[in-house]
Image (tube, rainbow, N blue to C red; front, side):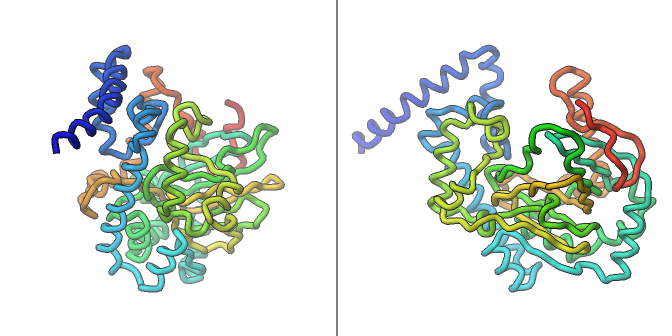
Amino acid sequence: MVQVWQERFKALKPLLKEYQTIVQQKHGWLKAPLWTLALATGAKSFVDNPVLGNTLFNQAGLHVWRVELAAQLAARRRAKLAKLLSAEDAQFFNQNGFILKENFLPNDAFAQLEQELLSTELAARETLQGNTVTRRIPLDYQSLPQLPQTRQLIAQPALQHLLNYVGSCQLQPMLYVQSILSQVRKAKADPQTSLHADTFHSSVKAWLFLTDVLEDEGPFVYVPGSHQLTPARLHWEKQRSIGAATADRMSARGSFRISEAELEQLGLPKPKAFAVRKNTLVVADTFGFHARGKSVRPSTRIEVWAYARRNPFLPWTGFDPSALPFLKDKIIPLYWWALDELEKRQWRKNPWRPVGRLRAGDPPRFIKK
């Protein structure tokens, strides 16, 4: 027994020495405890956190330990939430990583929602990535009083149940009207067109398309089954984590990019492009590999877009503070206020620029950085 513990300590010794090196960085004695505590959260940036991004730690399995534990807890939480869905929907999601519902709303209800969201001028922000502008109009305490049909959509238990199951928690999503305006200028390709996982654990995004989406006009793209943590995926995660801190910008920040050749090596199928009719709902686990399809011409895709991500290490499904009645419709304004404050203090540039009041389908206003 003594020999076993001696061997374990011998293996730990270089890791402890490496941690000591991190502590000895500038302000490391102050920041190292925070970097370490972040291991128990959804923190994902390898470049911003020297503990998460440490090559030696990840060779020893730090990243894959977090990935495995998060996946195990997500599976347990989903088992508790399975009663919210039909057996068919749950089985389809478990196999594919997404749920697709055509004609999600009755025709009359969708027509009214479409008219409301495409014709109403609302406060918006835009961000520019490569040759694409993404516009988001928050569905919050300021906009929702003007949008009765949208309030009915958000209140639908069927929508919330899908979000909860795919997100593996009872959660309060951020909700927007989102417009993707492709090829607004000559520039590098939109980085969102590269296949990627959003982070190291399950999280949910959803799209209720308000416009028809063609296969060559920037559709949502997903690799079926890529949300599953297979031995091949876990090995790939470990290899990527070892050099992640010096990888491409998006991977270094915790959103690993993957090539189609690597998909084949992982035993995964080719990506599926969601060329769909309006009134189609897609809810996806973005631990699975996905992207925004390339558009061969200037185009506009408009959708009600939902996003939610909670701490992946929670053993329970509920108790989401952002769902409190006095807070749930103020999350987006608070989030944007925080980003604005960080920029004012010159800590971090806010990519989301206010562009005034406009309609979802209006031409972009923010086309130069």
